[in-house]
Length: 267
Image 1: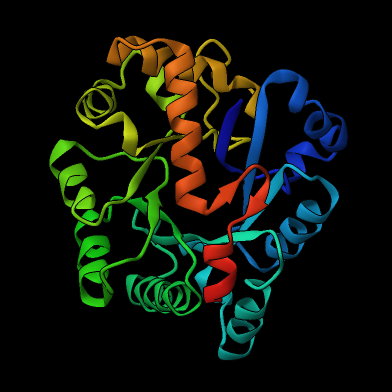
Image 2: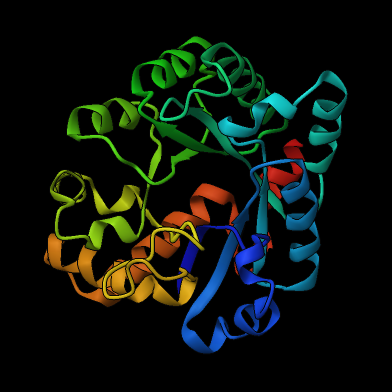
């Protein structure tokens, strides 16, 4: 069964068929999916979804592009949401310098605060880093506690930056972009990375893989990503599926559909 580590099923793109789609996961080989929040509203929707579907888990956090909505009051509220039973990570959090707003100082403040929150309650982090590799790594280094688990979502840098994230023993989220013919740099990173540090993701409804590029994405497209990773690494699709599933379980502390006792006891 495939482990989907990053999707946004709270997105309005799924309003017409959300229930039908998510219910189809088991019959299509999707064993577990993690819904990732990005703002206050999506945190609430993510928690609702985790309660509705046994194989859907959640991450709560504020995307860098939405950090202007954070205040001291709603940050305390955000912390409280982390204790819902099926919340398995803080994310997606990080830095995105592709857009001018919010300013870098705001993004960095709340990235660091959310990192420290994840450490306090012993949850892994889901990092969004776009055109901000140096500042992302600098903040990680400044607050590193030596045991923080995490994944760099939709990894978009080269091997040199990948090597820096590997120093923190992070996982790398590989999605539909790896199937794009012009994604030479990412294909090189996938070839170079140990398969034990790769997890599968779609970022649904965004970044659908070839042959569905440009269309609404969903976890049902994960086999195309598996096939490309298998091709690059000269492995079987079965081995890629199995190893990345185990990686996802280790990252999020999920085993056989349960939040691990390691996480629960330390929170």
